[in-house]
Amino acid sequence: MFKEFAQGLWITFKHLSPKYRTTVEYPKQRLQPSERFRGLHRLVMQHDREKCVACYLCPTVCPAKCITVESAENEKGEKYPKVYKIDLLRCIFCGYCVEACPVEAIEMTPAYELANYKREDFVFTKERLLK
Ligand code: SF4
Ligand code: SF4
Image 1 (cartoon, rainbow, N blue to C red):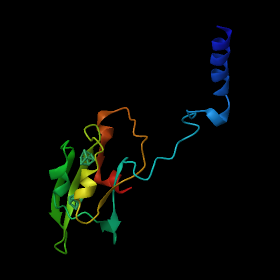
Image 2 (image 1 turned 120 degrees about the vertical axis):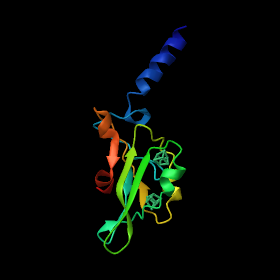
Image 3 (image 1 turned 45 degrees about the horizontal axis):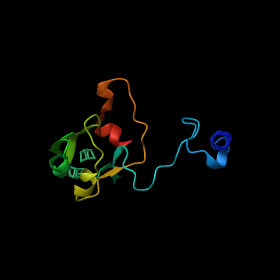
Image 4 (image 1 turned 90 degrees about the vertical axis):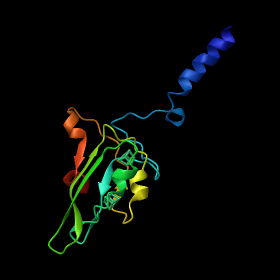
């Protein structure tokens, strides 16, 4: 009986040592996500404009149907997304949009601190995704 009690105490005190700590003191400490982590999306810029050519592939493959794209043409006749929005409250972070994009115009970043207070703040517009 005493042996088990001492073993329990040993395990408890062992975890006070930083060597055996299994948690971090968030937000003072932050873990670095792995390279394959799928966090907040980012639209890529190229030559002073978004790389996206508004081909509608990403909203088509998105299983959560949370991407809205509206295309337009600029003065050079190039298609661009007049509207590009992702509703993160519906997104399941599957990464299909990134895989489907033929011009690598959308990426997923390691950003995971996405908490917000208002529903509308979870809708990421083109301007926010380009930042
Ligand atoms: S990660 Fe998946 S669910 Fe989220 S926007 Fe892309 S395709 Fe849709
Ligand atoms: S982000 Fe890529 S897949 Fe989505 S509309 Fe733009 S070019 Fe097409």
